[in-house]
Image (cartoon, rainbow over all chains, first blue to last red; front, side):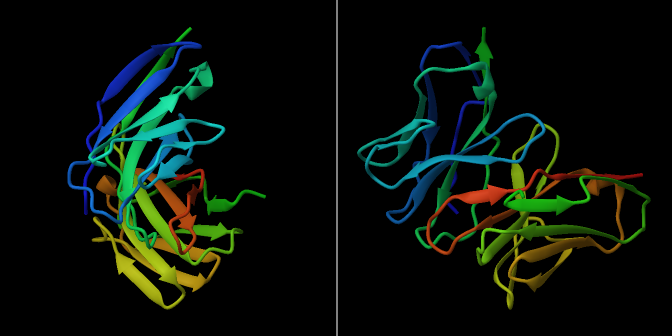
Amino acid sequence: DAKTTQPNSMESNEEEPVHLPCNHSTISGTDYIHWYRQLPSQGPEYVIHGLTSNVNNRMASLAIAEDRKSSTLILHRATLRDAAVYYCILREHTGNQFYFGTGTSLTVIP
Amino acid sequence: DADVTQTPRNRITKTGKRIMLECSQTKGHDRMYWYRQDPGLGLRLIYYSFDVKDINKGEISDGYSVSRQAQAKFSLSLESAIPNQTALYFCATSGQRNTEAFFGQGTRLTVV
């Protein structure tokens, strides 16, 4: 299964944008890029996913490199509630099992 | 009601005991998963099921078994619990196509 590489931790000031990077150099043409986040003491929750084009939803934006070997999750205005571990995951287009890495722990500074 | 419900939420058991963790979902999805999370680490896949008659091993299935009793129910069993199975366990469900997955709130299991 294709793997992802993320920084262990990042910090951001409250109300500023946050760019969370993810490298996935072994991605296949049919793998979707998914992002989940895990708030303290909770199960992971879906954030966003995409294949080739950049994606936007109410929570975040996903910017995908042209060669698809990297992507960036963008939180437009970080809030204290966004402090969490963010996981970048690759999933086959058929939606089969998905594997988590260690993620990026985001700290938001008031 | 929550999309994915796990019971119990917390459990302390003794070494050698058999224990079952239960999961039910209201999304109507075919696919269900069990994950384990150790402190400071990401989630690791234990077992997954694509329908009632389909069970597959994940990364770390040794020492665990599962049962898919119905589309909505997927149970994880530890036949003889050992201390290094102390962890946080998550159940999840997703649709057939490449859609989002929904996770339960987790079961914190301690084996003493």
